[in-house]
Image (cartoon, rainbow, N blue to C red):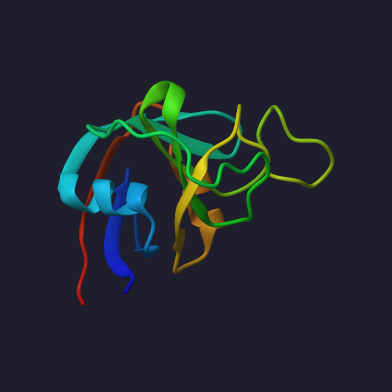
Length: 125
């Protein structure tokens, strides 16, 4: 069963859903999380207190995907192209584990600046 979360970054708040994978469960178990985020192209990423490897690593993700990036123990919000993208694809710095999906318009996160406070908390069931 998927789990709803609420992600707030700067003045943007959006519901999202974690999938049923082991990494997503580890993130759920670590909630709530609050830290400062960084941007890389149209991606927000930030370190979280989860250490995991890849189950099904992906080199290219979809708009609105949420990922876990093992080299930085980082949670990633993908809302467009990154500096590593070719054409219209959304490409992380290296493979990520897709752990969920935003439930609103991912492009809203374009308003968030590097250094903004980011939080993830359990959402309404």
